Length: 172
Image (cartoon, rainbow, N blue to C red):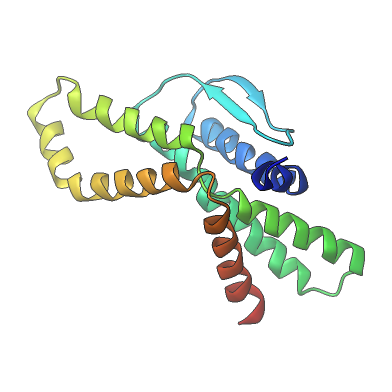
């Protein structure tokens, strides 16, 4: 068994939280969910209807922010006066949530596909003007998605991310 698979088994709550983020985004944005697998030791998924480009992009990248938010909540709960077993459970959830905060390769592909679709449709001139104004933001999203696509299975990147957040949230 390779290290990534072992850590997926060990930190499986992060996979569940990652997929819950996709579900929450779909529900908030009104996108119909077709198929779900959230309890998994190696991979989960949320299959949803194709929607407007901006909705697909939000659904794809929301786990990055959602998982970090869950970790922050866990850190604040750990600082409260609670028993040791609950503190250990919260640390496990916080670390697993951070470990799987990086959107998957499929999430990155969905972002690329949505942006491409958005810029190839025939649209009124005013929509093209809005897209030209938003082009720098689009480029940033593409770069971040490309990094997520590369770093999806990078053990070192995930450890650095977890270490960085542990340093920021616990030590400081």
